[in-house]
Amino acid sequence: MSTRDHRFFSHSPTQRILRLAARESQSSMDKQKANGLEPPISKNMSLLIVASTSSGFGVGQPVTAFRVDRLSRLDEELSTWPATELKTPRLNDIHHHLWLAGPPTAARPLHRQRLMGRNILITEDPDEHLVWFEDQIFIKPLPDFLLDWESWKSHLCSDLELRKAACGLLLSYAWLVRYKSDLDIAKGAGLMLKVVEWPNWVEFINFFLANIDCKTLSSVNQRYRYGELRLTRLDTIYRLSPPIYSLRNFIWGYQSRPTWYQAFFGRNFRWMLAGFASLAVLMAALQVGLATIALQGNAPFQKVSYGLTITCLVAVAASLAVIILVR
Image 1 (cartoon, helix red, strand yellow):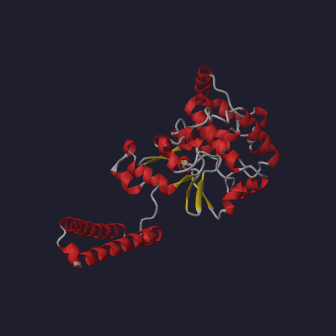
Image 2 (spheres, helix red, strand yellow; image 1 turned 30 degrees about the vertical axis):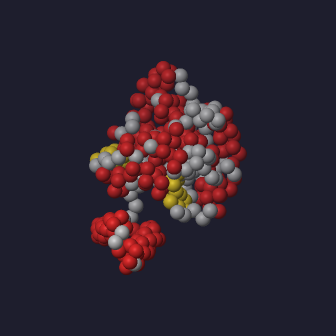
Image 3 (tube, one colour; image 1 turned 30 degrees about the horizontal axis):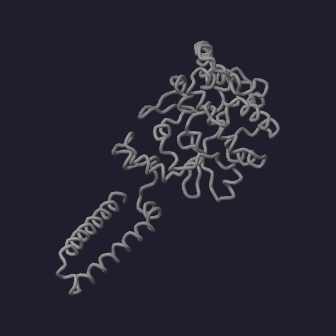
């Protein structure tokens, strides 16, 4: 390698992040000693050793960090980056309602996802990990640093909640990659390092599962007491749940999806058709009833007919307004 190339790589974002991580390592170690947390993986079975001799926090990191409306360099956000990569605050906020979005069981392995006709879509948001919609399921790639013992020792075990989030994400991959075919699918989809071999993965996961409580899941984030979560149910929970209720959540739901004209009708045409058909039958029945002699002088029926007529008119007007807004 030439002197120029050496200078380029020595000043790369990865190297800057590694230097900053080294400076913060001592404080993280002090926190770890105070709370007594230990890595749930074996130092001798660190799968990242197979892939790279670099520190796990220097492998696979994003180029930049985005906070609300500000784009910044990752080395400026290194102290908070692991939390954004692992924690699931949005799902934790609605944890008591997650039973409506999915059963408290393990997620299906990747080969079963394929058998069900689901397309695997990569997401980098841990709050979207294992969320599914129709024939799509969102899966976050397994961060490389979760395979590295040094990363656990120096960073992830410095905070209890961060360790639980890391254990939860790694547990989800114990669900997803149960067979060698699952590992092949994960590599092909870009979810895991391609250098990870099946015997090493089996040994790694067995050691990990032996160091967490698989019955109570007390050592993992509470989100991972549920496996796959249905996006449409999450949308409903996010729109109507009082603790997080807001106008923005009511409009966008849990995940904003395309709201253009064709996509809106593609998702909701059947429900809208059923609703308008029911209204048409109801109005026809009321019209026939009002034409009969027995019901023409019936005051309660007249009031009900009047109320339902106004309701139908308002519903149609509201539907037209929604159609105009989403176009």
